[in-house]
Length: 63
Image (cartoon, rainbow, N blue to C red; front, top):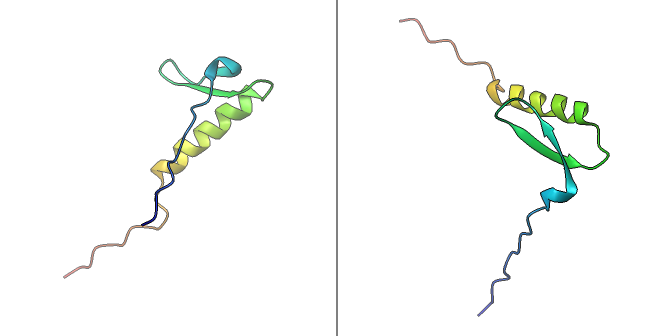
């Protein structure tokens, strides 16, 4: 019988990261020395991409 290897996930230490405020409810953490403006634009690009459909919706068939 095979033993399952345990997956150990270590969470990043946010005390060693730089906080970037996106809006009054959203904060993200990036590496120290990274560009906060680039992080904001990448965040908003991902959020905008979430709402868009990859394929155009089909038009309903007229009967």
